[in-house]
Image (cartoon, rainbow, N blue to C red):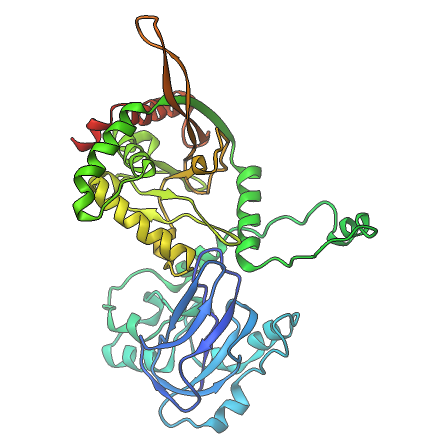
Amino acid sequence: MPTEILMPALSPTMEEGTLAKWLVKEGDTVSSGDIIAEIETDKATMEFEAVDEGVIGKILIAEGSEGVKVNTPIAVLLEDGESAEDVAVSAPPAPAAPAASAAPAAAAQTTPAPAASAAPVQDGTRVFASPLARRIAADKGLDLTQISGSGPRGRIVKADVLSATPTAAAPQAQTAAPAAGAPAPAPAPSVSADAIAKLYADREYTEIPLDGMRKTIAARLTEAKQTIPHFYLRRDIRIDDLLSFRAQINKQLEPRGVKLSVNDFIIKACANALQSVPAANAVWAGDRVLQLKPSDVAVAVAIEGGLFTPVLKDADKKSLSALSSEMKDLAKRARAKKLAPHEYQGGSFAISNLGMFGIDNFDAVINPPHGAILAVGAGVKKPAVADDGSLSVATVMSVTLSVDHRVIDGALGAQLLQAIVDGLENPMSMLA
């Protein structure tokens, strides 16, 4: 029977997307791994690969359609011997508009296509697998109930069967666990949008609809402030030695076309601090804390309409020039919305620097599941008292460490911040 191709979830926060472009047309033959469409998520435009082989029998969602819900059928794939006439019987009707209510979901539940690719098991539940996967499993003598599916809704596809052995892995029931642990939708506002609009009915204003990125930012930051017990640690850091050291290095690196920023030093100092205080290199995982070994540091990058937090992985092992080059590349692609999900997901710690905008200090909101985020202000010349009591002028940078108290206690957070300060006030140590 024909197989539905479903709208994929290309990021953990994706609930709907825009089918930006089809790269195939009806009648085209595709193989597993072929790029068949471009889909705009709340963060970026991603390529969508086919997970089965066959012929595109019918395209159900036209390119350019917005608000297509995850797991909505977007096309139908035909197996050998099937024709376009089969699609008219088994394929669900395309939604009339992206905003259509429950009709697409109901059609997806009642269509016979998924049931036709399901194999019954002894306990009365069903295992969903493509016809090709079931044929290969039969030839290899494999039990489909012992194979985890990587396709939409945990569906078993060709690649899963080819990589499986007779003793392969977890039952299908286990693949449903991630879906059950998906984050709940943001709570409804206490005052309706219409009620707020009425307050300003006699004032001139422009209504700006929320795009996917702004909706995601709103939901995640609301979740963060409602569920994460933040506490804040503040320090002033003297950066005169850092600025002098940076100038010397940049002069030496000038022939190579490399210019280090203060932010590059901050990234390196934070990465080293996470190694010096390993207990603080951790994330909150609901019912446990995960303590990471590598220093994966996320850095907030402002873009039009929102922000990205690309992650510099293994930052403690990279040179300052390597971090600088990687950060410039990530920031450039973030502004063009060309980052892949693995480039902005993960990490245990984040940096948000508003010093270039003249902000002296601020408190940043933790990006879950991170354990902490460092808010960095501008370097400002201030009076300073030396150890011998003499008065001088120093360049001082104010930082605030926002900490998740579930992951990091006060004393541990203070140790982490002290390690960051030590690195920035003694920049030569970052080259050791």
